[in-house]
Amino acid sequence: MSRFVVTGAAGFIGMRLCAALRARGSVLAVVHSAQRDGPWDDAVVVDLSGEDVPAGAFDGAGVVFHFAGRAHAVSERHADAAAYRRVNVDGTRRVLEAAARARARRFVFASSVKAMGEGDGGTEPETPYGCTKREAEDLVLHAGHVPEPVVLRIALVYGPGVKGNLAAMLDAVRARRFPPPPPVANRRSLVHVDDVVRVALAAAERPAAVGRVLVVSDGVPYSTHAIYGAMRRALGQGEPTRALPAGAWRVLARLGDAGETLLGVKLPFDSDAHRKLFASAWYPPDDLGAILGITGFRNLDDALREMLDGR
Image 1: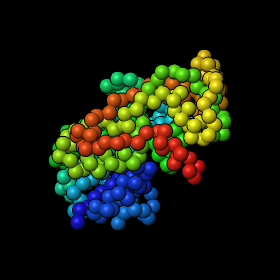
Image 2: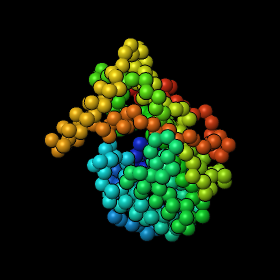
Image 3: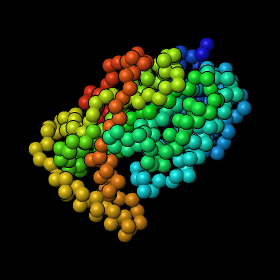
């Protein structure tokens, strides 16, 4: 029977990946805290930011899925660069070393499109998160720990149970606390969590994936205005008839910055939030049909209703 290792197993993607893998073999979950119950056969608790993987923990594993990491900050102005390095770089090195000791062949690393930079057409990372993800990619691909490395640069993930900015926006639109944004022609890349799992499984099996860096998104260039409209339709609120002008959003962002300086606390809307809302973050996906045989990606319009269930 095949044996798989999943780090970040208790996370949003990791839980679903573990559940899918159990139909294919036994699963060892690497978790950060004492949560041992989940869709896996065994678990080991490791703080990858400062602890080595216990000797022998990965023995017998053919594939290691490294999905643990320090997530993208809500505000890059308040990002802890050292903390990113401890988890995203040093933690990845520890997992690679454990995989090498166990002689695992395939290593699937969950990186991020932020390793390519910000906005449209970025090539170099700019934030602590993106820089440490890029450095971790280099370790996976070039440090020689495993014979079959694969890097997945994953776009912003959505789906039932998602947290973060997209979930916060959906909650605010439902509560009618989110003013209609203007039709700014920005573009953002997204991907459904189930498609991330499908890609990860194929990346663990397909020979064509070895040594590749693959951009994973659903291929739809979403604008903020389009996302807002899709959320309203899913909520049964209808199409917005007017929008808060772009200039008003900029004024609100400056007021948020001033309030943070005065109060010393993070406020709901500032220049960081404005940039995330209206800037582009578009990363053309690789042809995952040709490389991995993955087609028929989900899109946000189809998924929003299931995202609303239970919220």
